[in-house]
Image 1: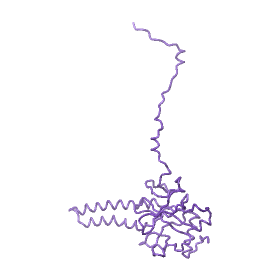
Image 2: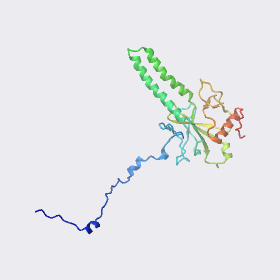
Image 3: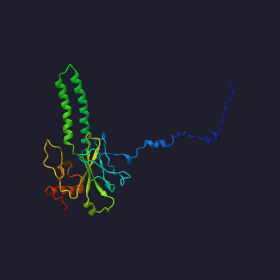
Image 4: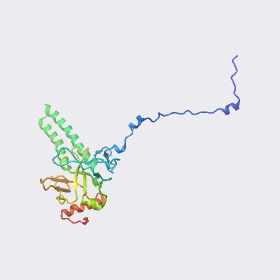
Amino acid sequence: MFPKPLLLPSSALFRAKIVPTTIYKQPFTTSSLRLIQNPFNAKSFKSNDSNVDTDELVSENNPWSPTLEDDPIYVQERHKISKTKLPEYYRLSYNPIYEAPASKYVSILKRLTLSFGVVGLYGSKLIYESAQFDDSFAYTLLAGTVIPIILVQWKTKDYVTRIFRLYNKEVPQTLDNLVKDENLIVEKLNFTGGKTYNELLKITGNTSLILSPEPRFWKPYATWEEKNNEDGSKREFYIVDDIGGIKMDRLWGIVEKNSGVNNGRSFF
């Protein structure tokens, strides 16, 4: 005979509680902080155009930096290899007054031509050393990949990505003080197209800053130019018109006035 099963009363069944199983996650530790990127330390920027999300331009200018008031500003001068540090009483503006609409595309174009140039150089070397092909094929491949690099670098060497104002922290931020010593930080793309470098552009009393001549297909793209009266060297800047609002219209008016052109944008 088998023993009878133990029968519980119905009241005991109603008093039973069903406890759900709780899955505990790993606690938040200090090591997890390393996986979180601090947005203030990022030095790359992207334009408002979101059609291209594969590139980043690395810049020394970070207007979102929490230490913007004390961040040093370096500029690249002509005929100098090392960068020059500006006086500590200067700071960047909190926002750029100009941002190029096609900076990402120009950057990608520079990178692509350099990449194809490296591949073409290696491929032409293989063809040149191969006995199955004539040497003319190697020369043709080499020219077809090197010539685009020269054209792109030459035409876009003065392309401006962003423009910042410089403010003197030691004087009140008034219009009179700004006009007395008005300077700009102009960003340009470097040779590889992945980084930018700064050039200092003086506005106050700079009558040599004029409009560039009519564009020619054999010349680089440029809209502004500045000539140094001491050594005769010339700097050029490709800045797209009708971008930046009234702040850039004021600067365009100054450049047009220096050039003897009156388009109604001069405030003087």
